Length: 103
Ligand code: HEC
Image (cartoon, rainbow, N blue to C red; front, side, top):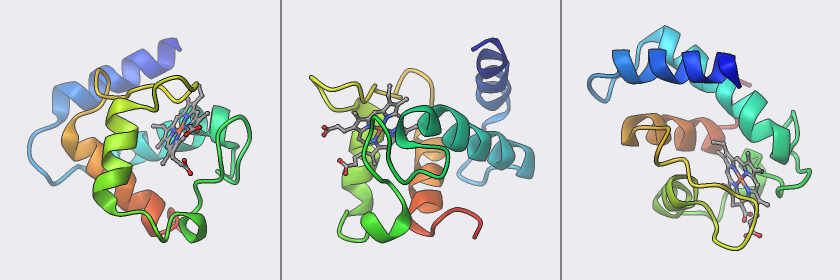
């Protein structure tokens, strides 16, 4: 969690416009694989949380994904990420999930 705090600090302190730097993008990719992955599985194919690979998210509107990530799902372990991530960062994650990561 300590490295996450550092990472998020780095992200927050360097986030400017919609365009994220390669370093920020790498940080977000790590966050998705490690932090989201701790519930959704290291390969995002499901665990405590459901499968969130690109093929299972095809029917999701980007806006709906954005809301789920920002606000979480009340009454479930899915936490809100709004306190930790900027809108630009969440947009990046939505695109990342929709296109199936870096594959
Ligand atoms: C503490 C565990 C946990 C963490 C960490 C977590 N999730 Fe979730 N997530 C869940 C659970 C449980 C659900 C299912 C909620 C429900 O029952 O509707 C969920 C649902 C979702 C959904 C909706 C998928 C669907 O089919 O309902 C998306 C998208 C999602 N999470 C993305 C993320 C992303 C991106 C991250 C990291 C930024 C993340 N989650 C981190 C537990 C987690």
